[in-house]
Amino acid sequence: MALILIVDDDTAFRMTLAETLDDLGYQVRQAGSCEAGLASLGDGAIDLALVDLRLPGDDGLAFLRTAATTAPGLPCIVLTAYASGSNTIDAMRLGAFDHLTKPVGRDELAQALARALRAHQPAVAEAVDDDTQAGEQMLSNSAPMRAIFKRIGLVADSDNSVLVLGETGTGKELVAQALHANSARAAGPFVAVNCAAIPAELLESELFGHVKGAFSGAASDRLGRFREADGGTLFLDEIGDMALPTQAKILRVLQEREVTPVGGRQAVAVDLRVVAATHRDLEAEVAAGRFRADLWYRLQVITIKLPPLRARDGDVALLAAHFLRQHAHGRAKRLAPAALAALQGHPWPGNVRELRNTILRAIALSEGDLIDVEHLGLDAAPATEAATAATATAPVTVAATPAGTAEIDWDGPLDRAVELLESCMLRRALAVADGNRSEAARRLGLSRQQLYRKLAQYDIE
Ligand SMILES: Nc1ncnc2c1ncn2[C@@H]1O[C@H](COP(=O)(O)OP(=O)(O)OP(=O)(O)O)[C@@H](O)[C@H]1O
Image (cartoon, rainbow, N blue to C red; front, top):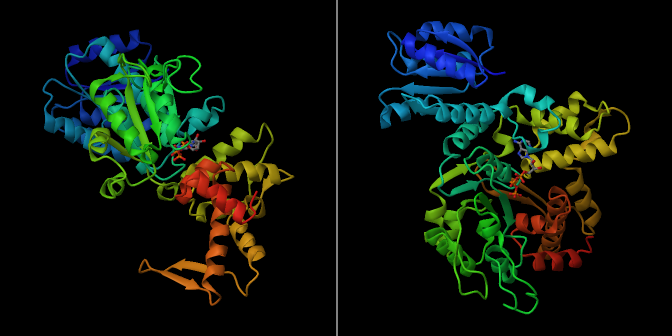
C-alpha cells in the first residue's frame, strides 16, 4: 500500500484529504509546513507527496526544490487554490508530476495518484525484481529517462497526437504503450502498425480497411487499423518511412476524424489517439521533400525525444541485470566485472534492443554461471567479418576524428574498400536487428529490395 505525504497548513483540508486517501486505500502521513514535510521524507518511506503551494514560511516550491535533492525521484503533486500558468510551470519545472486545483474531486485525485505512482514505478529498483511484469516495463534510473517518465505522465491524458523520436531500439514503442496505459483510453485497444514493414501498396488497406472486391484479393471487408483502434490508441511506428500519398490520407483522417475504406464510399467516424514514432530526423525529411510539412506540424504537437542508451547514466548495468534475470530462466547467470565494464564501454548503436540481444546471446553462449567478455561478442563480429572478407592487403578502417571528420586507413583499390565496408555494415546491421531484415534495411537507409540485392551480392545468409 503506497504511503502518501500531505503537506498543507490548512488542518481541516488536510484531515478531509487524509480521509479521502484512506478511503482510496492509501496510507497517509501529514505535515503542516514545508519544514515538517521535508523532515517526514527522512526515512525514505514516502511514495508520493501532495504539496500545497502556499505555505507559511518556505512554500511548496521550496519543498519541491529541496525534495529533488533529498528524495530524488519522489513523485510530487502540487495542490493550489490559485492555479496560474506561471505557478504550474514553476512547479512542473521543479519536478512536480501534476498540478491540481483545490477543491480536488475524489475521482480526479484518484486518477492523478494512480498515474503518478504508475509512471514512477519503473524508476524504482524493486521494479526490477518483478519478473512477471518486467517485459512491459520501461526501466531506468537515469535523469534523462526520469524526465521522459514525467513527460509521459503529463501528456498521457491529453488527446493530442504525440510524436516519439529517438534512435532505433530506444523504447519508442514502450513509450507509446505507456501513454496508452496511463490515459483515459487505457480500457480501449492499443494497435501498433509498423509502417516500414508493410509494402506501400498494402499500407492503405492495412490502415483504412477495404470493402470486399475493392481490388483483386479483397475477398471480404476489412476493418483496417484505424477502426480497430477506435476508442483507444493507434501507434504508427516508423511514420518517417511512409510514402507521401499515404501521408496525405493520414493527415485527412487526423483532421476529419473519419476514415474511408479503400473502395468504399462511406466515411466512418473514428475516435482515437495517434502516437507516431520515427528514428528519422523529420525536420530534415520535410526539408528534403520526403515528409509533408502539414502532417509534421500536426503530429509534433507533443514531442517526446528519447535519449540514446549511451546517454543514460547507470542504465546499462540496470538493464543488463534485468534482461539476465528475465531470460536466464531460473539459472544463476551473472556478469563478470570485466563483462560489465565491456557493456558499459560499448556505444550501443542499437540501444536497448541491442543490449537485450547481447545478453540473450551471452546467456546462450556461456556454459557456466559466469558471463565473461568473450560471451558478449561485442565488436568482435564486424572485425572478424572484415578480416575474413578481406582478400586484399589490409581491412579498411574508418575512424572519427575529434574534429568530426573521418580518417580512412586504406591504400587498396576503392571498389574493394567499398565492398568490405558494405559487407561489414550489412552483417552488423543484421546482428543488431536480430536477423530482422526490415529492421536491418531501415538501419542502413535501404529499401528491403536493395537490402536483398546486397545480401545476395555478398552471399550473406
Ligand atoms: N527502458 C527500457 N526498459 C526495459 N526494456 C526496454 C526499455 N527500452 C526498450 N526496451 C526493450 O528494448 C526493445 C526495443 O524497444 P522498442 O521496440 O520499444 O524500441 P523502438 O525505439 O520502438 O525501436 P525501433 O525504432 O526499432 O522501432 C524491446 O524489447 C523493449 O521491450
